[in-house]
Structure formats: C-alpha cells, structure tokens
Amino acid sequence: MPSRPEPYRLEAQIGHLLRRAHQRHVAIFIAEIGADGPTPTQFAALVKLGESEELSQNHLGRLTGMDPATTKGVVTRLIERGFIERAQDPTDQRRVKLRLSGEGSALVARLIERARAATAATLAPLSSSEQHRLVSLLERII
Image 1: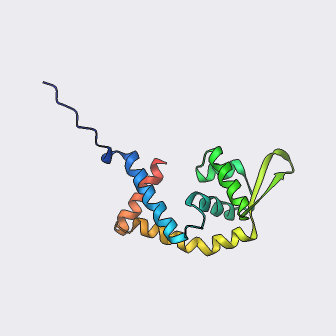
Image 2: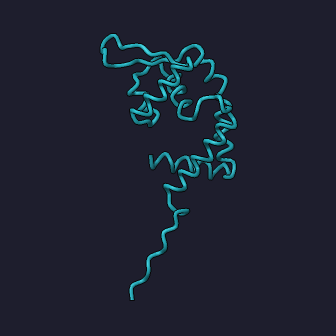
Image 3: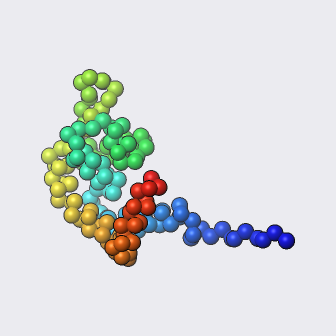
C-alpha cells in the first residue's frame, strides 16, 4: 500500500516563511525610521544612489532587485519628496540618470544607524552565529 504524502502545511513553506519574515522586518523598519520616512524599498534606492555619483534608473532597479514598474514608482515618489534628482543622459536621450539631492544625502546619513537597528531587531531572536548563517544562506539563494 503506497504511503500517503505529508499534508501540505503552508506554515512550513519557504515562500510563506520569507513573506512573514519580510512583513516582520518592514514593521520593525517603519517603527525605527518613522511612518513618514522612506519605505525599505525607497531606502534601498537612496542607499544605492548614495554609493554612486549617479545611476541610470535601469541600473538602480537591478542593484536593488526591483522590477522596472516598481523602480519607476519608487523613483517618482523620491523625486516628489525632493530626495533624488533626475536628468537626461547627454549621450543617450532614452536613458535617465539619477542622483541623490542634498536633502537625500542628509536623509541617508540621518537614517543609516536606524536602518542598522532595524536589521539588528529583526535578527535579535537568533544567536550571533545563527544571524551570520541566515544571512549567508539567504545570499546563496538570491
């Protein structure tokens, strides 16, 4: 007689667990940064722009793991808030170049320690070695 397969438990599925972990981190991030601050995705864009003098919108999306539609929305909101500036690439009119504004640079500098605190709070239930292992394993699957 064939054995019955294990029942499908949503709570044991990697996608579900990753989504729940992400939801928890977003809640912690917003508590640390403030509800009026940038979202984690917006903050990621600001940090990556801060690491470069300027980036194309396409390249920014690739660096932050955002699809083109999400990148466009994030960029639009950050421009509206005055945190980034957009200019046409003089060598290719189809390409948009982005850079942090002075206000955006100041914002990143003010929030970087709070973002680190959000990461620490997210990982707090784990030992130091478990934290390093989790990050290492996640890096391997992305």
